[in-house]
Length: 179
Image (cartoon, rainbow, N blue to C red; front, side, top):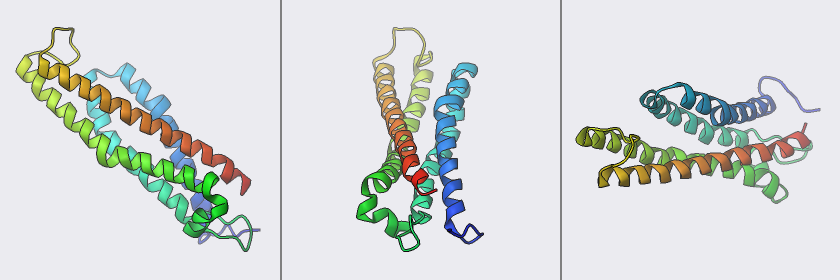
């Protein structure tokens, strides 16, 4: 039986996985939806601009913690990064953890900042146009282009987040086999 003491990586692995899954599920399917429904657009945009860097940082960091605390299946099995990289674990461990990490990193480092920049550009354009980005047409050509860019970036970010969630959920079967 594996040690579950303070210095054992196993409890940290379980806690990290639970935090990753819970945070991703809640933000994607509860918090984000309820916030969008209940807050005004400016309040929602401000909230998401503050939450996303923290959220994507957690989604990027926790898969690294999962890899570092990966439990060996047997007393003589590989654990940690070595275990994650083991050929026997390629599809059920490495791929889901790497997928979660890479999609979150893309959101944190590229797509999220581009989306925030586009939001700021839309705010500036709203002042120039004297109307909100979401007001009924007609819109200036500049605002139409910014809205199109924002929609594309939001779609890419949402897709990356969904793939990250799928990677996190798919890892559950590998983790469950080690319990």
